[in-house]
Image (cartoon, rainbow, N blue to C red):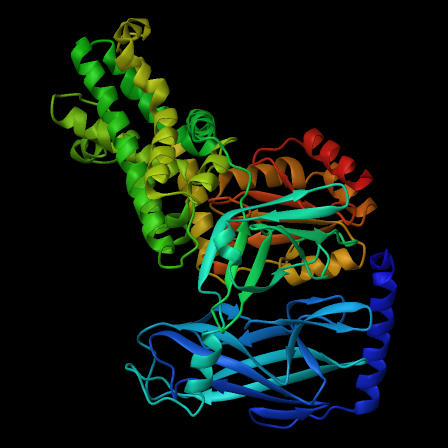
Length: 622
C-alpha cells in the first residue's frame, strides 16, 4: 500500500521546502502586503475601524498558476498555515475560518487546499468602551506553505494600525470579498454521524440528505482516515482508506461536505459515545456525597455539627424543618450557579465549577466573611452578627430556619474549590447537554452534598443519638473557629496570587501551551499537564501529596517527562476551551501524553502517589 511510504515522501518534501526557501531568499516589506516566492500576501479588514462585537479580518493569498496553499488538513504533503495574533486589550480572536477547499494530486499524493486565490478569515470580538482617541494595532504573525511540485514556505509579520469607533463605520474595498468568502463557510453542522472501524477501512454514516449534490468529503485531520477521495457505498455511507498515521488530536472526528452549485458546505461531527443520563445522575449524587469529605467543606460541616448538637433538645418538627431548609439552601445555590454557567457560556464564556473564585472581589468578600465568623465563634463579635451568620444556633422558628438556609448556601460556596470523584465527569457531561439536563445534574450534586443532614429529616429519630446540649458546646464553638481561621489564611493566599502577575513557569513546571505539548511530543518527550488553580483545594492537596513528592519528581526526571502547568486561578479562555474539550467543568484536570499513545490519558481528580506512578509507568510502556 502506497501510504506506508508516505512518511518518507513527506520528509523528502520537507527537505525540498527548506532548500527552496533558502535559495528563493523571500523578502519582507513593511506594510500590509508582502511579495514572497510565488505568492502575494495581503492582510485585510472589512471595516475601517474596530467596532463593538464581531469584526472580520483576512489573509489574502494570490498564487501563481499551478501553485497551491493549504486547508486546515493539508493532506499528504506540506503543512497547514499557522496564525499567531497579538491583539489590543479588549480584543480577542474568536475563530479562524477556512473557506471551502479542493482536492488535488501532486504525483501519487493527495493534498487539500486552494489554487489561484484564497482568503483565510479571522473572526475577532471587540469589547465596548475602548478609547476612540487612541491608536491601536492588530498584529498577525503568519506562516504558510505553497507547493507546485516543490514546496516553499512563507513567513511575514503584518502590523495593521487601526482606530476604534463605538458604532459601525465605513467598509473597506474588501467588503464584497468578505461576503463572497463567508458564503463558502459551513452553514450547517450535523451531529447524527458515526465513524466505525472495519478490517481495512473506516465507514462514515450520516443522514443521506447530508450528501445530496455533494462534491467532496474531507476529514478535518488525517489521523484515522487517509486523504484519498472517499468511495460512496450507500446513500449516506462513505468508505475511507485507513491512514498510516496516529492522531494525537483529542477533538471529535469531523468531516466537511462540500456541494455543487456554490451551496454552502456542512460540517459532520461524529457522534460521541453516549452516556446514560441515569448513570450521570448517579455520578452527580455520589460526587456531591463525597464532597462532604473534601477539606474545603470541613469548616461548614463543623458549623453544621455544632447546630445539630442543639437539635437533641428541640422538637422533632423543628429538627425536620431545619434540615429541609438547609437542603433548600444547597439546592437553590446549585441552581443559581447552573443558571449563571449556562447563561454566560451561551455568550461564549468558558466558565465552569468554581468560576466565582476567579474573581478577587468574591475571594475578598469570602475572606472578610470567614474572619468575622471566626471572631463570632470566639466571642469577639456581637451576638446579633453571630445569629445573622445563621450557623444553626438559637433555632427559633424564624431565625433558625433563615440560619439553616444560609448554612446551605455557604456550604455550596466553600465546596466550589473542591472537585470530588465522579463529580467532574457528571458536570462535564451536563455542560454539553440541554439546560434541563444541566439543572438535573446540579440538583443531583446538591442532593448528595445535603444528604447526610437530610437523613435527620427522613429519619428524625436519629436526633435522639446526638449528645445533649451542655457546657461542652461553648468549648466546641471556640474550637470551630480554628478551621474558619485556617480557611481565612488560605483565602488570603489565593487573593494575594490573584492580585499579582501569576508566574506559571515556576518550580518544576513550565507554562502550558498546546503548541508546547505538540513540540515536546515531536521531540519524543512524554508530557504531563496539570490544570490547576490556587483556589482549588483538591488541586493543592494533589500537588503536595503526589506531584511534589520526591518519588514522583524522580520518576519525571528519570523518564524525561516534561511538566507543564495550566493555571486557571484567574480566568483564561484558552484553558477554559481545553477543559471544555475534555468534558470537564473545572479543575483539576490531569493529562499524561506519551508518544506511544494516540492521545492523552485523563487521570482521576483525586490521586495517590502509588496510583499515579503505577498508571504513568503503564502508559510509558505501551
